[in-house]
Length: 142
Length: 405
Image (cartoon, each protein chain N blue to C red):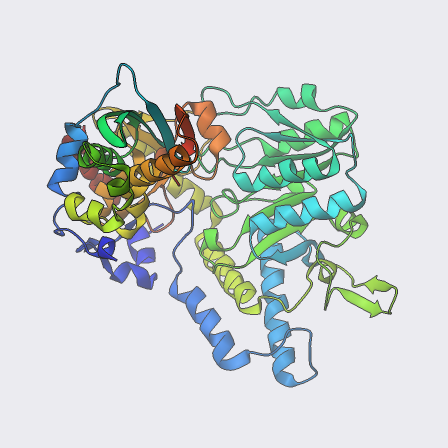
């Protein structure tokens, strides 16, 4: 798995993680979201809430709030930017490796932090496909 | 007590972590092993391995003798009789042993079990889950803001229905030393028949503990938290209480006589040790006890107190740091957070400096909720730690603050 490859040894986290953690993208709330996806990891206390504006199967806009570690926070910024303007099918095809490609690799013990937002989004979309009229899905993630 | 010299007896400290000398501050989770313990285990397998209590050959007798010598050492260590020491795989199993055995005949529907909000999951989940199965009730003593137990509540919360009181001797999160002896005395004042259990995972490795002084019915601890190997734990039980209690696991060695429709159980402690035991683990634990006795538990306690005092003083100089708990009596555990930086991030920075700490909920989620946090970073000390190592941690924390705040 790519995640076991380390970034430069002298670094604690990759530059992009530190940068996105300190200056998150798409952080905040939407005025009238089509759906809200809420999830987290109770073991480490990470929590995230994505608000999405959907139109004809496309993510028109997305914002997120919550709290967590630098890796999960950076990954939330990254994914929200990644899926903007994309169709559901494209989002469902996003692989774990795609996250690490942009985020840089993280140590094995922190893989779940990096993948939490992707899991929340994928599980949320699955619920939405089952019931397209839902406005809210919670308990997503690991 | 010379920590630098002690450290040299632990082979693991020859390695480096991320190119730095290895500093181990996660001792409340598990401890490192000295050469003497590792040698006792390999000696057993290389020279004396045979089935304990099974077989008439000399090798089996040797194994049995080493196994029971180790039990004698553990018994002496906490001032118990040999037949009062039951080997388990760890403290979690010790507590489950008591819980499962008691619900077979002594704890019934409508009864009450009193524990505290400070407990490790291992002294909470068994009672909670079995209460749902058996219909007894679990009540909780509160934790005060300073991290001490609201000890006065024991008197109030013990009722005629209370069958068991179970409490941590020391908090694995806050380091608070609870007045176990006073709590047990309160229980007995209220009702002679209340069974008392002390979770001593964080006390037996770190301070002198005498079961007769505490006067509890049961006391549980783990070998791996006191220089011993994993997979060996201890349940101390008063002879008369163990004698009355139903066995937990059934099988070989715990029996005296077996018929197709009935079985007579073995004497103590074998009655509670079904199946082939972890002889190497017990022997390793015996070696760990000898190692600690040579240093002296008073010295261990004093050393950790000194390190804790030093760490608490130094950590104040790190910007944004918040330390949890300010109990008067505490062991070598320092839980803290660095501003809003997630504890896992703090641990990641420290790791780059070769320092291992614990970050997260410390298997005490209800206590985390009481503290109003999802987790903390936690440095916990032992005999091989030094003030110099604490200085390295303080520098690393300042770096974490610079990098992430």
